[in-house]
Image (tube, rainbow, N blue to C red; front, side):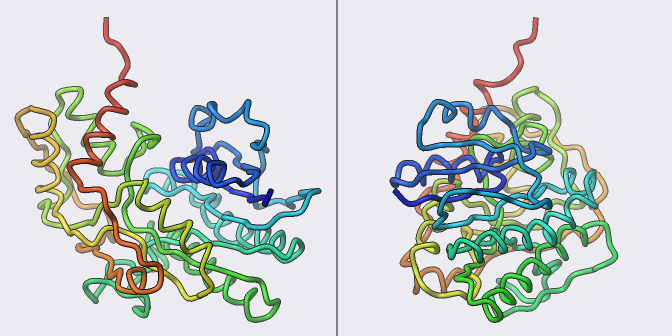
Length: 314
């Protein structure tokens, strides 16, 4: 039975990856220090013999006694409120955490996959974004703690590949959503859902014309597995190329919720990207992957998840 180490295992994406690799016949060692992850996301796995959870700060030395076949490094605050609240920890997990997990992969002769992000492109001047675009990032702005942490992590990953022969992979994840996101995550999908379910106006930042592309979590997990199981080391954009403005997203979600769409406009955050859309030609060609879940289908599942977990008001 092969063994995979997944950092950030109690997070939104990490917990779904734990499920998938267990289903695929792996033994899973999940690591998380629970700064932004939730034990609820992996509670259903705690009695599974093939799953072991370790409360681990991956910026510290990582010790695993048994053989390891794959290391997936997903530990990091990922939403703007989280990485703005934890700027130093975000930088450390991108730098020291990547160093320690690469060291584990090197010691074990394991494959290594880095979860990078579309944020490496910053506020892009090229649209849509291809993997050969180097980005437009403000290193001293508030978002730089996340953007530059991931850019450094990519550079370190490639250095370990070239200098030490570690079998590495890099994925750049575009906006992903689905069950197990935190309702107070601060990202647009849980924000909108919470506001719609509580009858509050939807918060629109700027004029609402900025765009994103939303990929359902099951599609992303399938792509990640395909990246692990192929041999190319250059980065892959992973996301849904269907571009939508924040106003359109709000209107679509309000229609699904069966409620009137009321807006409250707020200032656009510093360095917030105006447009974000992945070019996934490389993923199509190499992985044979395209997202299969429509926004409407994915949002129905996500709405249902959050509705079941809304606090009951007296």
